Length: 403
Image 1: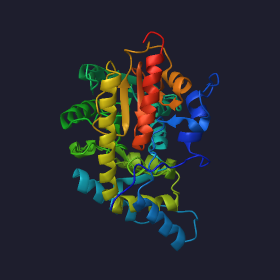
Image 2: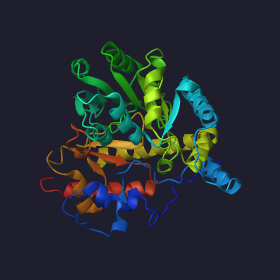
Image 3: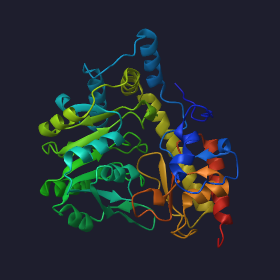
Image 4: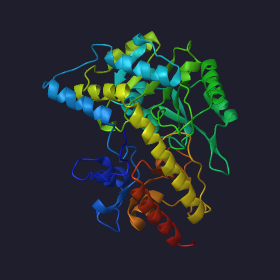
C-alpha cells in the first residue's frame, strides 16, 4: 500500500493550533506581530504535529467506532485491549513489555508531567532536566511552585549534543532534587540517548534516590535503521521510574489527547489514581488501539519520507547557509539548527522569521535555557512546503543586516 505524504491538506477553519493559533502561542503578551503576508499564507513549522493525514489505521478504527457504536458516554479503561496492543508494540519494537498492573492513561504527556511535579515533588524540592528543554518541563514545575534545575547539554562543532556528566552528577546529587525529567529521544535536539548514556543517567538517579520521569513520546520516530531502548528496560528493578509514551506523535493523533503511562511503584500508582480523573474519550481510545494494531506499514513509509526531508534540509543548508550548524537528528521530525553565525543571540528569531518571511518557527529562546541562536523546524510536511519554507528562511537570513 502506498501513502501520499506529498498531499497538501488545508487546515484552515479546523481550529488547528498550527494554522490559526500561532499569534497567541508564539506572540501572546507581546507587541502584535506584523506579517509580510496574510495569516493564511504563513508556513507553519512550529507546533509538533504533522502536516500529513493521520494514519489510516487510526482513522478507520475511529470511523468503525463512530458508525458501529453511536453512543459516546462516559468511558474508562475497563478492559485490557489498549494495554494488549501497546504492550505488544513495545515488545515487538523494543524488547520491553510493561506490566499490566503498572499501566495507566493520561489526557496527554504534558498534563501528566504537571501531575508528576505536583504529586511526587515536595514544595521545597526541585526538578532537574537537560537543557535546552521542552518548555512544558518548566511549566510543569512552575505551575506547582517547584524549582527547576538545568544541566546544559554540550553541542559540538557538527551540531550534535551530548550530556555533561560531571555537571549532571553534581546537579543530581543536590538533596533538593527529587525528580528528573528525561526526554528520550530528546526534544529539541533529536538525540536518542545510547544505552551507555542511559545507564549512566539511570544509575546516578538511583544512587541519589531520584524519581525518573522518562518522556519517550518521540521514540517511534527514529531514523530508518536506528533502534530505541526504553530506560525502564535497562532498570527493571527501579520502581521509581515512570515511562510516558503515546501514539500521538507517531501517528499524528495529538488532538485526541491520550497517552500511555507506566508507573511501577505501588504507592505512586495509588497517588496517581487518587488524583487523576479516570474518564477518557472513547473515540481516542479506538483510534489509539487501531494505530498500534495496524499502523506499522504507514509508520515505516513515514520514516522513509522524513529521512528524505532531513537529507534535503541538510544538503540545502550546506549549500546555501554554509555557516549554519545542523546534525540530522537520531529521532523526531524536528530539526535543531544553529544559526548563531548569522544572528546575535539576543535576537528573537521566532519574531524575526515571522515578520521577515511569514514562516512560523520556534526560536531557541522558547526552550528552557541554552538555546540562543537556534531555531527548531518541524519538517513533517510535504516536500513542496519544505522547499518553500527553506527558500523563505534562507532569503530572510541573507537579508538580515550584517549578513
